[in-house]
Length: 490
Image 1: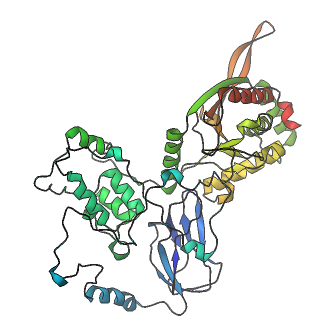
Image 2 (image 1 turned 180 degrees about the vertical axis):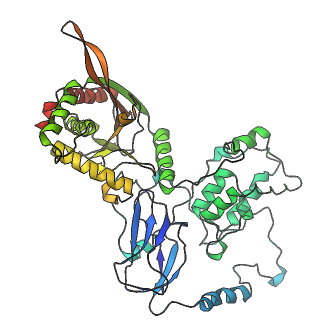
Image 3 (image 1 turned 135 degrees about the vertical axis):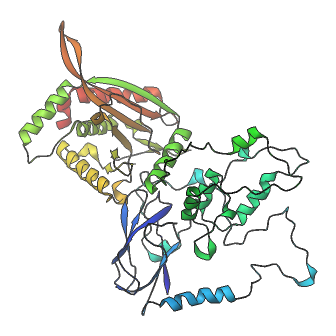
């Protein structure tokens, strides 16, 4: 009998939620057949069987979230085991005497370990050091996809838990023992998933007070979220003689708690929202943004769009102002190729393709599908592809290839009446263009005051990769194209 584990379905995926099981225990499954649907940080994707056989047991129910690599079901040949057979191993385990791994040896009158020292964690519980700064690139950043072989899926390791920087630990006199050390030691002993530890750390929860529902009593994310909804956990009393941190230090060590009144609800973050929060925080924390804004005369751009829609009729593509901006942005990237780069710490990656990410706001959150080789496509093709990707994004049907490999992003809030805004760079790209609403404003033409269409564009730039002059040259090239929109048809 083999285990089916939670696969890594995208480069940004750290855990997955079982949206639905399409097969029941005891049902026969053919190789390549879809057995479940998994909600990831980007979309709802299919989990397929890699061999033919019988679904023996479902380990993770619908709606539950587990880390990558954790078993979600058992698969094998023959009929599914009965309830009595399933519970037999648990009964034997409960009746078996403690093993050497769980209890210290009583021979040679060994003294019990001191409470001041933490027991070394076993190899299967040891947590690697935080690798947040070197985590694999998100799906938007590369064209790579998840491993497809059963062996690769089963060997995917859980994402390591983030570790707090040393500066967050309260400083105490050298001759006293910090009271927090005992709590940290107890938390280290508790079997818990990295995500459960992370959420518990953010909310100051003591994992030793949370009952684990995972394998072998392991505390998982659902247990921590349930604890957050229950009344506050009691704080264990400090040991005699242990120094208490000063009020200011204690406040600094604890994250700010949102005020909550009667009737307020707590909604757990979705996979997508957690990914957006992590990547946007990473972008604003690590990328020195600077912003360049220009306003173009969009009168001819708006007129050309109306003419194209009238010529193509109802059966033609519905070309939008944003489609025209995306096309112009791609041509400008060819003319000022220094902007079509990615920052990679010790080098710049100069891209040969112009792949434009088009930000789409969905009910689940913001996602950026990618239109490829935009500079080589007509406005009609760009409009069709952008619309298809947006529809897939709203339906949660995007595949990793649909949002991988972007080299530049366009974000448009003009449809909401926003005239100008600053967008956050989508790493590792070097820039993002924010597009506002088209407005009608009075302007002077040949000595007369006339109404003209105006459009504000703001370029957010990574100062590590580009300087202000390069960003300004790019906006000049973009402005020239949009104010003479017939060039977009060449």
